[in-house]
Image (cartoon, rainbow, N blue to C red; front, side):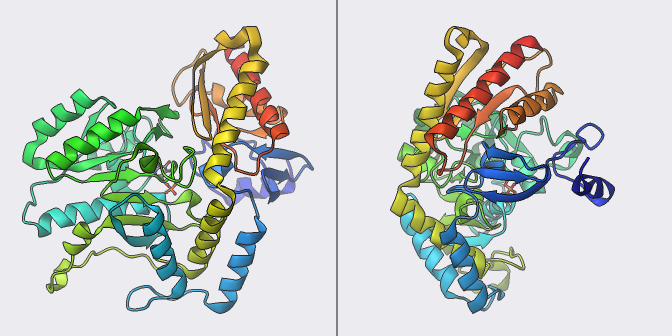
Length: 423
Ligand SMILES: Cc1ncc(COP(=O)(O)O)c(C=O)c1O
């Protein structure tokens, strides 16, 4: 155990970590491009973009430059009663790039808070439209929207939030099936507040992918009833699906769009909840209680906004969504080559843009399968950081990943498929 790991063990508490079991944390001392440098001298490929965030690569010079410049000019100022150029420009750029109709940007800190803001916008807007009984959201089975209470409520309590279930608000859950969805709309009637989903890819559910047709059909059914669609693009945003946004790929305009992770190219915590003018207008009353009562100390942090602008610029200059799509295609093809006659080892191989996933058949099933630790170790032995979700093995590396590294990622994934057979 290195000195860093030893000191960590005494006072740190890590997210989503079973400290009694997971004792070998990676000591990371540096990062560049798609490489993480470890304290034992090894370098590993970041095959999951550091929890689906790193977009162009770690330490991208354009982003570091934007951060440094902004820190020297204006480090932080409250965003209630004040405004500043980086936030105003970022709101302009995001509303330009987003699907049609999203004209307002509300900033916060991370994916979970972007979701909280979206839910509160919709719920408060119903109160202010004199339809306070509209309180129940429809959400997808297996959905994951973050770890704060509203986000946990719309997420599937299984497998993460069972301990909190009695405290979570009512939600109607359906599979990605139009008949089930319209049945839920009918059943809820005037109690329905809207629909929230991760469009096209449900990340934490195990990179489950649904059709563009479902998303379009759901949008139509909601529009027919005057109900809002909240698109959680915290993971799918900024090119992961091969388009800047999954909703844009499907040609669908949500009423609320939640963004985080890749917003700053994965460098700093910043989130945005985009909304329509119609929603915004629900908050224009002169009554003091009509404001959206949500705000964080670091709302619209100038440095985060400056880095996000630099990242958007890179997206445009380098066509990051197309790069990610090509990387996903290369990994998928290389994985099939690598497996050859053993292709039967992977179940439900699937890809959307830069996200490639399959099910590895292990003896223990489900998210809490201890085999995932063995799978992680095996990937590291191949020089790649992967973090299987239960028996789902997946990769989504950053856009700087070259041909050689795609092959290494594919080899590591094939090794995990073989390990699944043995266990
Ligand atoms: C789809 C989705 N929504 C929300 C979140 C929560 O984001 P954060 O971890 O930044 O709070 C995540 C995190 O993985 C996510 O994948």
